Image (cartoon, rainbow, N blue to C red; front, side, top):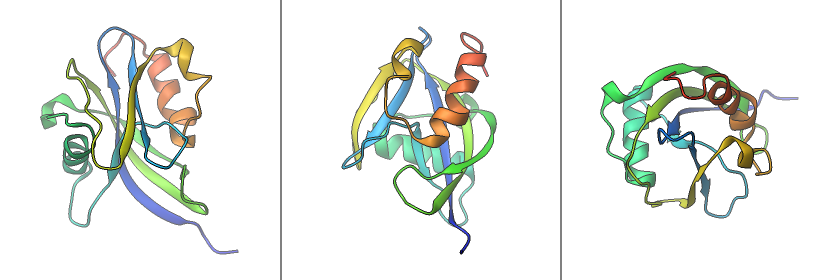
Length: 139
């Protein structure tokens, strides 16, 4: 058996300040996840996240608004036999997302809704527990 491929990504736990978190779903997929995307060669995780948030959901974010949560690994949601190596950041914003590029849907959700949703492994195993553990507190 071969080792799974590693996909390097940067993702954001985005909160709106009212207890809701933003989840996105890519076109042609079923699982919701955090906004973000692949880190290009020579790009830092923060730079990749700033670029991806602008491209995917139209958020204009400064580096100073992003606060590191951690680095996590999980099975890729939509690419069999792949894993994501994710640099995850926290962002609190009052900007409204506008799905673009490959994003079909962007939803603000509260903790009561999220358990009934189809979620990416990284979101379910690492990011949402961090959100719940620190509810209402800047991570």
